[in-house]
Image (cartoon, rainbow, N blue to C red; front, side, top):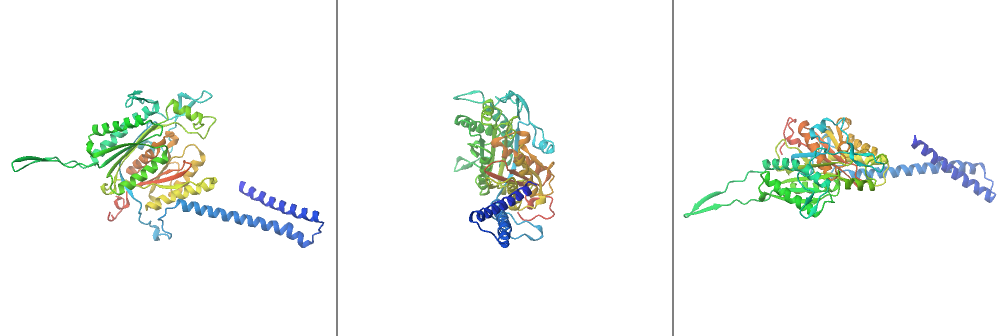
Length: 474
């Protein structure tokens, strides 16, 4: 209705301008128009201007839509359609996902959250934190968490905050579980043998190389001293879980937001696809359940309260993925394909933003080379903002029109709050759990960031899919 009214007002405006100009000219010059001149200037001219305006507007919108689709579509998608509905073979690199774990403030495992997709638990009011009016704020936090189990309040040379201690406490079970899986995935070291040569006893030492990279991504406001402590702690936890110190390296890096993590995952997939290193354990932890953090969010009007309905809910969590080169994967191992990123065009109308999200949803399965029917679940980062939720649902339906939005999609921030750099790994952990139990693909999308949008697919490769009748060569 608003579109029809807008068009009507524009036509009336054109007629008013044309009539006013013609009448003003005739009166100022004293010209008496003939019947044909009145018909031309008062009828044909405004009609022609209105028609030309609508044609130019439609042409401009069509060009914008084509530009959005071209920016969102993969560069290697063939121009012609594939006969019989088949999808072309994918040239996108992939890596095996050998393990995935998460520990969130919402205090539910991945399988439980998937079962609750149609009725997710919501964050509760926390009496420890209040808005400017003294009302409690919504927070997603583990209320029974021991925040000094890993990091103490006063460490040698530096002091820690509540959020930093809580994040590390959530990380500990995730890191231990994935390091245990890494120990099982790495090939066993050969026992060194002693040989006697010319009467001399000689011990032949085996050359041990670093084949596992362990990386922890933390928020940008963590101090250098704390990051150094985290690196030493990860070294100790890996050794405690049985990993040989000669076989792994540890790195602690900063990730300012979720997009930084997606960029890092792209780099990891590219590195593993080339075989360097052969295994990769990527971890992340963050907690906004901190008095200083929440005060800063209030000052910047970032937090959700009764006067800011589009704000964010503080959350906390830790998550991780154990990745390996595709050649090292077992037949039943799910694979993560290289995430697909597109620039988000600024200043788009809601309809145009939705069309860009739909193009992203269509592009990822086509780029990977799977049919739409294999996409059995969609996970995304939409929160309570209506436009972001609409874009996420539009992208999911574009990927597979048969998805039931209320049961086969899950918006993690709705129940877990703002997770910062943990969000991408937590979404991929949920996707990994879905693929293992359902044997079909999971689509992961990031549509809430202002600068870029991201999509990723986790699935069991078709050549190794146990549901197929024939198995092609790997």
